View 1 (cartoon, rainbow, N blue to C red):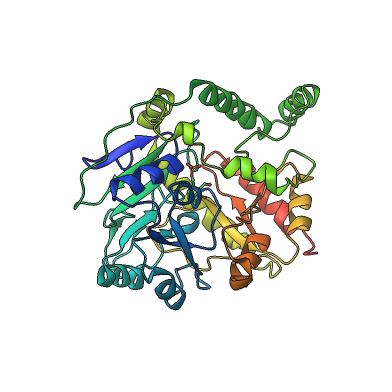
View 2: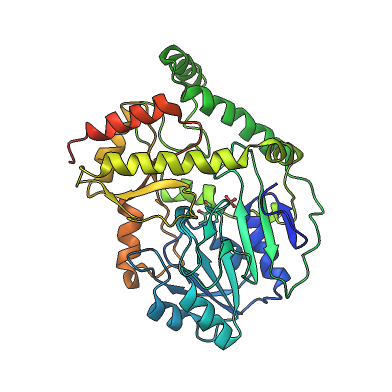
Length: 370
Ligand SMILES: Cc1ncc(COP(=O)(O)O)c(C=O)c1O
């Protein structure tokens, strides 16, 4: 089991794990917290739900916390949250020093970075991401075919928080499992199987499954901000729920080393494909050796055109992230707002296979760029 250790507890999701971290670190209603403006939104919710006061900071071109912006946000704060975006270990040397100096608790969001390791010299510690923070969280379904699950690792200075008292909501777990099976079939390399699944879903009037990595075959769905909020929100009724037994079992039997290796290989292959496609720019030009990517993040000027082109070829491309959380003062963060509009994630999933990877490369080469 990845990230298992004396100070690790397992939860229904990374969101729930963040809520537990807030309690474990003794943060109180009204405390200020430095939060990243470039965010999915779901990682902000536990802090808002706990009544903490957000102070936002921006990112650099490399997606590290911007030092100047971070220093302003961390002033007077009791804690700070930083994110290792898409599996790339962020350079936290400045952030760590700033937090140490001010006695601020540092929480690392490694929801995308379960398998990534920091390089010696990139931050000030080498080894698994998050293990030198005051608290770190991880999300299993992001990288693995499990229905739920997140982990909280508390720093050495702290006790582990008490283990979950409530089970994972069984109806949600079984619904997600069914959807995952459907998703797997829908992205099958067999066209007849894909068509059969599409037919079955159409008959039942289903939309793209929750947690889907992209669009339904042939189309691009634009959800409203209200619909998106429903996906990212933090449900207080799940705040004590642990990880399901199904996820624990699947995690115990997964071949983690192969998952990490295949994701790296797929990302390297795609980066090669893109090297002569100037309209598709890698958002992370250089991946450190220890990184295991969640997606291959790219920026394009016309994201809808690329998503439509790929969807017409039954390839889902993730829009990262369409929900603009109203807590973020967007007028102060134009770069982050632009990223939320123009950043897409190309799949590097371990299940892609030779065929899937070739199909992806061919589709990308076929996009005219507008
Ligand atoms: C950066 C980041 N942190 C945390 C989360 C929350 O993860 P979970 O869905 O396991 O609660 C997400 C989810 O999308 C995320 O993108």
